[in-house]
Image (tube, rainbow over all chains, first blue to last red; front, top):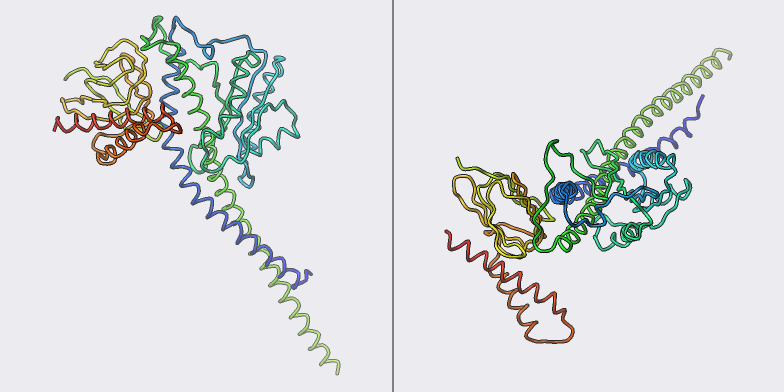
Length: 286
Length: 139
């Protein structure tokens, strides 16, 4: 029979943990609201610019920016956005799993892979998993600033321009709702053409002023907005996942406490019964 | 009913307008543009200035865009603005003050100011004021 004192101690410690997890849940919930707001403010811009870029990639322009040219792929670059801190359920693992699967298909084709990691968790993972990490940045705050991100992204873009990397893929979690975050991999450059109704003829934009300057600016803006949105979205995902993880941890702790409480009561009752029967049998013997 | 084109104005912070319009008037890098439905595909920059939309039924709405890009497809116009707002949201007093501040900085002619930035500021504020005035005339 379990010792009542020991059980009491165990219950106490579980209750303490429960207090911590429920506090973390509330913190995550309030942070999530802010992060979600920031995310939804940026979304229309990043969605629209992606659409426009999709059209641009579809057009048949006289000038082709080097980010628009498909090259035979010898080396692929991944920009992987993960969280800095853990305790957010399967969020990072799901993303990393999807990414690794994606990477494997390239490796099978004997294509080499470069990694650019935003966030601590990705860095930790690839340190043990292995992989050619060319840039990493962590401690992206809850309120990311473009200038902080641009450094590590620049490494990738420069590599593309120099021809060392032939494709760049952006991997991040996309926020569906509080319960679901979807790991998503998207091709960043060369520009991904939008699916178009078949039968449309070759067409091109009128550019004002020069196509070159215009596309240069637009594409820079596009990449910045995509990466920024990925990071912001990731923050919202992190808080949502953390809230859910902490909620279930709190619930589990509650269940555990109930169970232990029952066992403890049983044990106490058994001890009392035993004592009584000892006294009674002792009295009978006298 | 007149033909319409789908127009959306988004800034980095939010989506500002979304809907069918009869005509879009914006100031592109190479001058004022009037866009009707069925326009040929066009891609151009936006200069700070007013963006006028004629909605279905002839009602006009005025917005302010502080630069960015505009994409025209035969059936859709997308304005990707750096910042944009509805003309009635512009704070005229604040715009005038910012303009004067920028002008003063330019006039001071000190070595430590970023000339390019300040003159861009000045142009933006001037464009904002132009937008407000245009908007006033209309009402």
